[in-house]
Image (cartoon, rainbow, N blue to C red; front, side, top):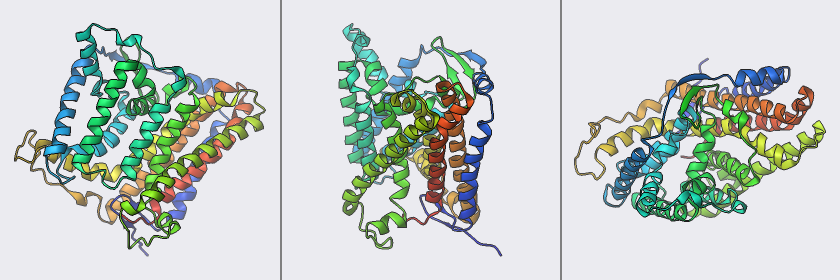
Length: 449
C-alpha cells in the first residue's frame, strides 16, 4: 500500500514513516561516535590536516568589490523606499532574506569567507580612512565588550525576522537595513574595521564562524588550498563565553523559527492552528519563545560540558572546554540553516532574479530575467516532497555526524588519552543525538503556514 506525504509552504511534512527517519538519524549520529572512539586521535589529526595547494589569491581588488557591493546595497535600499510594495516583486526583502541570509550562508560554508569581500562596509571605510589620512586600524574595541555587541545585534535581527509583524515590508526593511549600516559604519570609525567586525558586527561574526567549515582554506599570504570540510575548526582558538553564546543563539533562532510554526507550539499557547490570530497578536509569546529556546539550549550545552568534564576527570577549566567544543556547533548550525530555508531558496530565489532586473517596477530588464517564469511548483507534489524532505533530513543528520567528528578531534586536543577524550564528549554526543531527533521532528511535524 502506498502512502503519500503532506507538504506545507515552508517545509515538508511526511507523516509516514517518520519514526524510521527519527530512529535512523539518531542511530547514525550515535554510531559515528562509537566508531570514532576507536580511531587514534593522532591518525585522525594527520588526516584532517591534509592540504592540497590550488593557487594564490591576493586581495588587491577587495576594496573595489566592496564598493560595488555598497553601490548595490544603496540601490536596494532605494528600491525598498520607492520600488514595488509587494515583497515578492521588490528586490530588497528577496535579497536580504533569501540571497543574503540563506544563499550567503551556504556560500560561506562552501567557498569560505566571501563576506569579507562583499561586505558593503569595508570599501567605504577604507575610502574614508584614505581621504582623512588616518590609521583606523590603530583603534580597538575594549576586550571586556567580548562578543556581546554581536550577540545583541543578532538577537535583534532574529526578533525582527521571526517576531516583528512585517519583516518583509520593503520600506520598513529599508529603514532597518539602512539604519544598521549607518550605525555599524559609525562604530567602525570609533573602534576600527577589524575591531568592530571581529566582535561587534553580527553578520561578519556569523559568516566568519561558518567559513571555518569551508573546504577552501586561504592563508594570510593569499595561498588557497583544499582541505576536509570542518578541518579549519580543529585549529580554532577557544571562544570566550560571549562568542559561545553567539553560536548557540545562531542555532537556537533557526530551531525556534521551525518550532513556532508547529501545531505543538501553537497548541501550547492555546492557539487554534486553523485560526491564526496574526503575527501582531503573537509578539509576546514569540519573544518569550525565542529567548527561552536560546536559554534552554545554552543550559543543555553547559550541562553536557560539565558532565563530560566530571566523567572524564578532567582538570581543565569549564571556559576552555566549552570554548573549544562549541566549535562543533558550526556544522549543525550550517546544516539546520540550509535545511530549514531550502524551499525558500528554491522558490523565492526565482522571484529575486525577476525583481533584481526591474528593482523599481518601471518595466526594466537589466539582466534579462524580468520575465523569467517563476516555477513555484518545484516544491509541490508528492515527488518533490519526497526528494526535498530527504535532502533536508540528510543535511541535518550529516551536519550532526560532522559535528561529532569535530567534537572528537577537539576533545583529543584537550585530552590526549583516547579513553579520556571519549568520556569527555559522551554527554555532548547525547545532546547531539537528542537535537538530531528534534530537528527531524521539526521537519516531519504538521505546521501552520
